[in-house]
Length: 115
Length: 109
Image 1 (cartoon, rainbow over the protein chains, first blue to last red):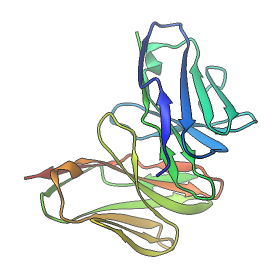
Image 2: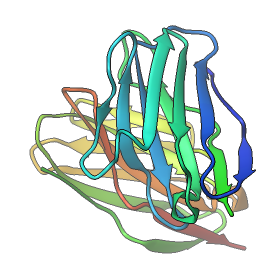
Image 3: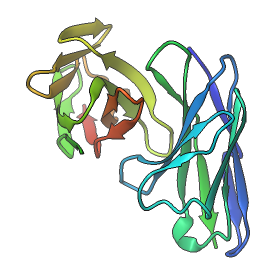
Image 4: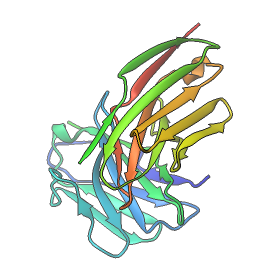
């Protein structure tokens, strides 16, 4: 099946710093990627839809100036958490659609801990 | 709007069969996914139903009734490694997925 990677797999940072998370589709081109956040013992919450070559679409309640998304190519989307705070500590997961299907393939996730 | 409901927890015995139900109310509904998620890991794809009926894939089967807004995931011959959270997710025509809160399945010996 299609493979999606994320980097880094985990990161610990100080409050106030910015963290960039990369999501790559390794063996297919993804015009659309999705970014989710998952707090402990909760389900995935869609943060934004990332479209190659255009601005991301953010879900209600997600600050676009805090969570910067760039989809620079058909295989790469990045999420930057700016001025991170402890409440941003979460599991961030991206997913991508393989062309021509509705199936989403998830990356392995990035665990962010903000001290 | 979007609303997905599934039981919070279920327990079953190794070797048995368990059915995890999911009901949804989704505008622009296109299909329904089931995912398995082990603690600390990303979800992995199990099944995708677009048409009514049952789709079987090895020990796992998934059923969809579009008219009833209902789906279930059936797990046969349960193994200890099947202990995980099972997420149902409805996808709309616009390609947006909404996830249920997940059902934590515990398989006991």
